[in-house]
Amino acid sequence: MGPTTGAPNRRLEMNAEAEAQKVETSATPPPPVKATNPAAVKKAVAMGKEMRKAPDTSKADVARKMFETIADEPREIIVQAFVDGAGLTPKGAQTYFYNCRRKATAAN
Image (tube, rainbow, N blue to C red; front, side, top):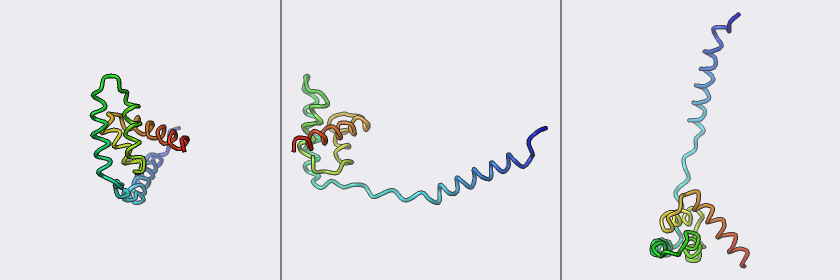
């Protein structure tokens, strides 16, 4: 007629076991990525903030100009620079990064 009394308890036990496994297997986060040329990154962010003040300059224009300055940096650094300098969201900054990188590799 009805479910056995042990079934709900078993589900709770399984969930507790699964949670315990998640905690045990979670690795420590990787160390933060460091800029290879912090001065160039600072310069690009400052340049981006200045360019954003111009009325006819799009965020894409700002990101492309910034990318020219910091193209040799790791992806995480460039994306954060786009967020800080061009005023992009983190997801938008990743999109602009991939577009800039694709355009740069096509030009070479």
